[in-house]
Amino acid sequence: MSAAKKFSSRLLPWALLAVVIVVAFVVGAHSAAKPSLAERTRSVADTIRCPQCTDKSMAASDAPTSVAGRAEIQRQLVAGRTPDEVRAWFAARYGQDILLTPPRRGVEGLIWMIPVIAFVVAAAVLSAAFLRWRRIGAETATDADVAVVAAALDELHTRDVSEGDGS
Amino acid sequence: MTRRSTTRWAVAGVAVVIVALIGLLAVSKTQTDSAASPLLGKTAPPLAGKTLDGGSFDLTSMRGRFVVVNFFASWCQPCQEEAPELRRWAQRHQAKGDAQLVNVLFQDTPAAAEQFFARYGGATWPVLAVGTDTIGLDWGVAKVPETFVVNPQGVVVAKTITTVTESSLDDLLERGGATS
Image (cartoon, rainbow over all chains, first blue to last red; front, side):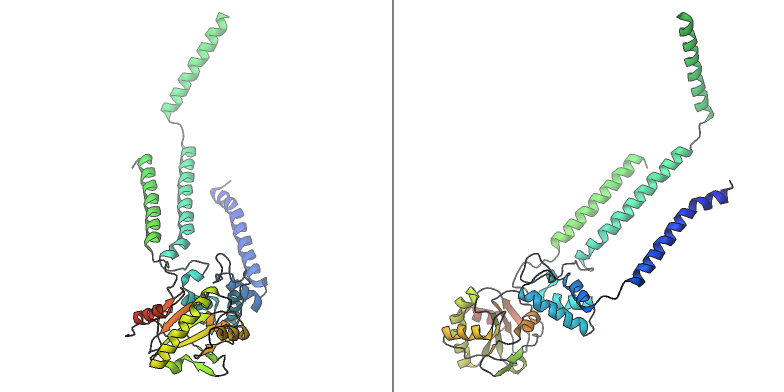
């Protein structure tokens, strides 16, 4: 098999996998129905803490403030505000603590970078390990290695013969 | 560079990054004071509507004097404790004409609010009691009582979530720039 054929046969499964992933993303993105106002409201309310509760989102709480908060979210979405603008509106009144998702800026924003950094470091370490293993596998025996092995085999053979004669 | 020293450098690097992240998060500004509000230093949110006595109130018409905005509910025990104090404070400053009290009902009914004030001798100041859920959100109110001080320029200058007294309200005003 020529080098080009070998290369293409190795690359083909990866190329097919990439095509499948891209097609799945495109189909998934286009076939998903546009979320309703109620779904968009709930999606935003999921990211805002209930001001009266300790560990519930506005979407999960029936506290009067959460009920009023959901109505306010819906009102603002109808008025054309984006989810980020709605969240900013609440943060401007209750503080950043009202948001259940960490901000993307400032020191707290570093938390978003940790998975990316971990992925890059892991990929680098794995790549280095694979390269090292491949290099070890590709190493060929030198003449000196061959001579050492041959001498050892000879010695073994001689010992077997002499032990066989002695029995 | 040997493999062992590379590993050592990598471990040291990861340790430095982890320590730096922990340090940054430890010294970053956290909101520990529950009376802190993003509204402090900013123009007060809208505060207008029908009052319990059938009149109307608009905060913008109060420019030129200090306004104490007190969110309350009839079912709230601390609100019941501070009601007589607020009444004394309001009457004293109404006579002087330098500051105004406004009560805003929070998660309660106008009928319950009327009974509440009847118990404490009635309210001679504006009490907003209808459609106040949106006002509560606008002011970032989570629980009652919460009390804000708005200065004569219409800027929120102080906030407290503790039960107020006649003298603590004066202190709050002084903190907000009022001269006694």
